[in-house]
Every structure is written in structure tokens, then in C-alpha cells.
Image 1 (cartoon, rainbow, N blue to C red):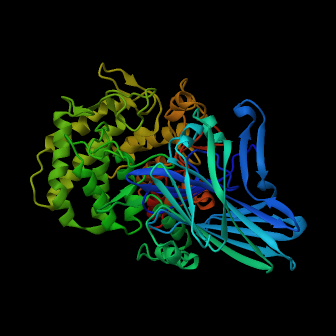
Image 2 (cartoon, helix red, strand yellow):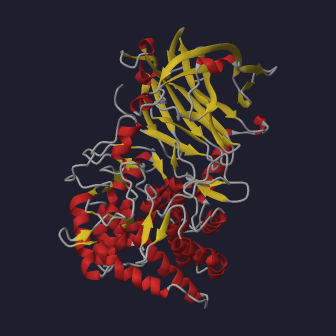
Image 3 (cartoon, rainbow, N blue to C red):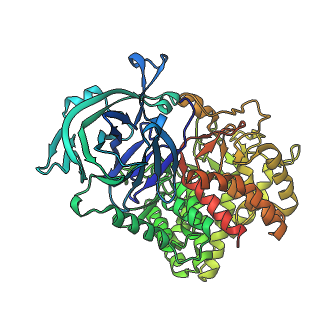
Length: 636
């Protein structure tokens, strides 16, 4: 019971989700059967549902919870109940499904979980099958509630404000309220109110991450029914929405979701495309008037850099052109001094931090790919002035960066994607200036399309000429950053790959292969590129421990899957997109494809050291997006 179990994730298009482990054992405070998104916040309202089967007078509990004796994390583990003993297997397609078998009684239980799109609801469908006719089998469902912000565990002090539970006259509907949160249940089973608390459940992942790892769960009672059939089907619904719960039907909801997935795009898709299309769908959320991209599950919201990097893979390769256009416009509406926000705060969207020196430059790239896919010149004309304002903001200077006298961009500390205090990268960062050249080149391309003046020709020439200062002749690659005092950082990092992989390259052809070879030899792993060479004294090969320890490793050795996109772009470029190079590049991509197919997504990061354990967010938008984008490129 001490190994890590795979985690599942399904989403509702609003930012809400259902997620746990394959055992239905919650190991994170972010796990929950129903995590609702409304009022610009996320709430774990329903932690889970414990199932029990009574056969011949004996009760078999299928749930599993983790405890620590005396609330001491150093004492022995206690698992109760021990439903894992009856667990057989789980599946993630087409929906999460779990199989249990009570061998000595010949009784099997199947559970499938579904989230209707656009609703803060979850439906569970059970099938109980008996190997032989049995009399009076009883089935129990006990909901366990948190009803709290998804960042904060429920504790005894929170229970002073009582949970209020009401049951309908027919005992089929249950209504629970706590701190202005409301949750409704409906089932064909009868409900018996029997309130109690599960004290001190333990979340192993939170302990390992250095956070509060204990939580108290409220149980209002249980649904139950008796039956004599050899096979019985049961459905239960939980929702926070103002909907008529009696109108919800599991089969209808299931068929609607399958139909929605099939009709996400008009593209002709093979099996692999369909799988990744469904994975991509998890990150796109629908606001009342526009769309957004969740950077990562469970804890990230909408981030500018992540969004712009994700648009080509999540929106364009999947044919969601209108959504791509909506997202680009939305972020431009939040622009200040040429900077789109680093992220959009969920509670104060117009108080955005403008402290990312690369997010706006990635927007150019997203707009360029949008045009290549759609040839929508009207949209390019619509945003052209905003693109010019971004360039002006970088030239004049803003809260994140400023153009120097040599036309290269100087970034403030912690404003690049490597943004912890352990990788401040103050000064001229290599990928920022590669992106700067790329953005100016894209603006030149758009200006020519629109027959508009391009006023930055001299700057474009000077950027290419002065980018020469990044060349590290000793190591035959690029310096990672050059400080304001002209100290050159010769750390081998993956940022230099963007100088080759972006659509418009600031590097001459003869140096591209040399740079690629260094990156490949020093940083390549099957799951992406390391953020620092293993030979470096600052290399951290395992991402674990408290927040400070994890931050030390975050960009100092940890593997990031999204970097595979730029890596494959670079490889194809130096090989002139030959058929052979595409076949070889597919080998680079295959481990990530296999991971995504197995686990239904791609994580934020992996350890730099073998066996490259997955870490961070279990599902990261730009990881999935870049896999999709280059997969599409290699199959073109």
C-alpha cells in the first residue's frame, strides 16, 4: 500500500473535475469525486462515496482510507476500511471505471464515473453481478463531504459551522449545506440520515509536499437497497447546480458525452488522434463570454505563457479555431505596457500581475500558427495594432523587461519561465531574445500581408547581429543568460533549443546542428529535456520534499515534457524535414505518447534521474499541447 497509484482525471469544461487514484484512495487535498468550479473558485464538495455490500449477513467494505495513529506522520500507517483487498483493476476509457470482486461470495461490483459537460455534477453508475442467485443482497453508499476551498483542508474548527442535511419525503433526494455551499444527491436508493465524522484522514502526497496532510470528512448518512437479482444497476447523482435532479439520466448523460467527444472536430481522426483530442479537451474551459485554458490540474489556473504555448496543440491541431481566436483576444484585453498577464487571478481578473517577459512573445507565435491554419487575415488585421503595442512596450520598457541599446531584451529577475529564486536569470536570457527575434519577424510577415508599414526593420537586423554574444565557442552551444554586468552563464540548459525550433530563427544554419547535439547529449531523456545538465554542480535529479526543496529542483534538472516540442522542431529543421528525420523524431515522441495513452494525460514534470518518476501537476496543458502539435507535424 506504499506505492504510488495512477491518478484519473475527468473535467466538466468549467474548471471543475473529478479525480482520485485508481484505488479511489484520495492521496491529495485536491482529490475529490466532485470538485466544483463556480464564482471563479474551486471547491472540493464531495470527497468520495464509500461502497459496502452485505452478503449473507456479512458486510464487505469497498472503500479505502489512509490514517496515521495519533495524527503523527511518523507513526505507522492505518488503512481502514481495506477495500483494496477486493480491487481488481481500473480503466480510464471511455470513462473512469473500477472493478471489485468479492471472491468468496462470487460477487462483482463495477463503478463508472461521469461528469456531464458544463455542469458541476457527477454521476456514478454501479453494476452488481452475482455468480449465482442470492437472496437479499444489500448495497450501501455513504457520501463523504468536504465542501471547502480546494486549497484548504476541512478541520474540526470548520465543523463549528454545522453541516445542514435535509432529506426529501420519498428518501430519494438529500440536500446538504455548509458555509453557503449546497450539494444535492439523488438516487433510486433510499437514504437514511446518520451523521458522523471521519476524523484525521491522511493525504500522503500533501505530507511529501510539506503541506497540511490531515482532513476531517462529514458523512450525512447512507443510501441503501436490497435486491435478489443476479445483476443490479444503481445510479447516484451529486450536483451543486440549480437543476432538476430528477431529470438527469445516466445513460442519456453518458451518450451525450460520447457524442460530444466525437463531434469536437470535423477532422478525420484515427484512434490515436481521438485519444489525444479527448485529453486536450480537459484543459479548455468555457467562460460566460469566452474561453480559457487551464494550465494544469489540479492546482493551476490560467497562465499567459502556458496558454499561448498551448494554443497550437490544444486548439489548432484539433480544429478549434474559434476558441483559439477567442483566447488570444481575451488575453490581449488584459494587456498593459505591452505585457499580457503572467496569470489571471480567479477572484480579481483585472488585477493581473504583468511580470512575464515571454508570455507576450509566445502570443505572437500563437497568432502566427493561427494564421497558418486558418488564413484568417481579418483576425490578424484586428489584432495587428495590439501586436505593435507589444513591441513598443518591449522597446520602451515595462515591469518585466526592456530593450537594451544593442536591441536585445533585458529581463528582470524571475520573469522567464524559469522563475524561482534559484534560477533568477536576470539580464539577457537566450530564449527571450530568440522569441524577440521571432516576434519581430512575425510582425514583419503580418505587416506585409496587410500592406502596413513595418517600422522595426533596423531592430530586427540588430537583434540577429547582436545575438552573436550568446555563442559559447568553448562548449559549441549558446550561453543561457548574460547578466547586466556581462557575466555569461554557461550552464547547459534547454532554453537554447528555441533559437533553432521557433518558426523564425536568429541562429545561422551552421551552428544549429552543434547546438542540437549539445542539448541532445546533455539534456535529452525519453520524457523531455532536463532543465540542467547532470554534469552541473547545481543539478538536482529528484523533485521532492517541501516547497523550498522542490523549487531548488524545479528548473535545475527536472524534466519538462513540453520541451520535447521545441526539441523535435529543431531536429526536423536541421534535417530539412526529411522523411527519415520524421521517422526518427517519432522515436523521441513515442515514450510520451505511450504515457499519455496509458494515464490519459501528460504530467507537468518528471524527475531528471532514472526512472524519471512523474511529478508536479498530474495533467499539464502545454505538455499535452506540444505532444499533439508535433504528433500532428510528424503525421502531416
